[in-house]
Amino acid sequence: MNKISEKNIVLTADRPTGRLHIGHYAGSLKGRVALQNSGKFDEIFIMIADAQALTDNAAAPDKVRANVTEVVLDYLACGLDPDKSTLFIQSQIPELTELAFYYMNLVTVARLKRNPTVKAEIQARNFKDDIPVGFFTYPISQTADITAFDATVVPVGGDQLPMLEQAREIVRSFNSVYGETLAEPKELLPDNAACARLPGIDGRAKMSKSLGNCIYLADSADEIRTKVMNMYTDPNHLRLDDKGDTKDNPVFIYLTAFSNDGHFERYLSEYENLDALKAHYERGGLGDVKVKKFLNDVLQEVLAPVRARREEWAKHVPDAYEILRLGGVKAKAAAAKTLGRVRSALRIDYFSDK
Ligand code: ATP
Ligand code: MG
Image: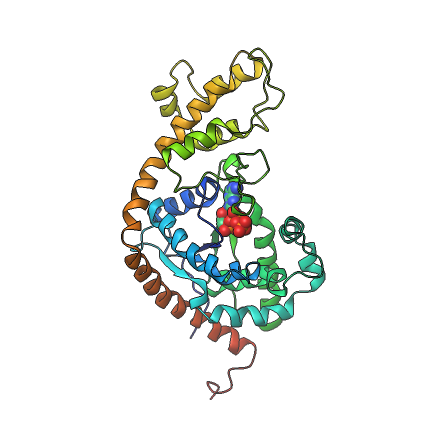
């Protein structure tokens, strides 16, 4: 009998719309690697959402294709391990599209319009009635992606909360109409609130590939240094003696996300920890350049091993694609099982019905 899996299953994904950045690292990638190495999960599916990327990049298939390579290199660089996690490409699993088609019957246009993430993304892209239907309905296809693998845990950044809420609604509605068929997913957010939504180097609320305000995992040491030294800080902290703000200040938010006491010992031992540094900045007398130099040291330390592994994998791109191909075979088998369950729940399993 084909039942909902009782295993502990994780699914998460990234859109191949650009290289991955330190917002992805803090918000999701670091946590995934920890989950993968915790041994607490039976299956971990990591998907490159190329079909979803095409919903708002329909005219740029070559861009999406090129970024599949960038994203898989970023994955392997961060320590995702194909022996422990299944890495695959969304478009290679047509079962996902079929699931999404059936879920569409359970969602209204009004509900999609109310989804806060969809609202924000529509605004950011300035879509009106010209919005591509595929983009408008992507929360539904995202629900297909999650449920296809019976995933109960979905590690994401804070911007994805409304997506998980909508996925749960679709699951409940499907199960109540057709009987218990789909597993209900739950988001897993980073413990550290600074990581859940890392701001851009320009001070905008979210570091995002589409906004061009990123420090990329592939950036060279020089690029990182230049970006950090030019970062937006507290605009009212003009002179050394001015009191400074650390709350809406991306330099301090990055330090909250990435620094630890060991970094203070190694690079800025006159302060015991981040609280001491923040206190000094807030009362005045601490200059931005000093704080930025420290942030640069921290990021260089965190990113150097990631970059080194990336450069190594970049010499073996065909091997990375072989990992994705094999992952796709495994992912397809898992999705086909769920689709079988869905078809019989929908009473369209005509020829397996004896
Ligand atoms: P796009 O602009 O194409 O949507 P994106 O930068 O939002 O790109 P996604 O591929 O949509 O990236 O998101 C992948 C994962 O990374 C999601 O779990 C998302 O929540 C997380 N994420 C993206 N940006 C940030 C950020 N600035 N801080 C924390 N997490 C983030
Ligand atoms: Mg996004």
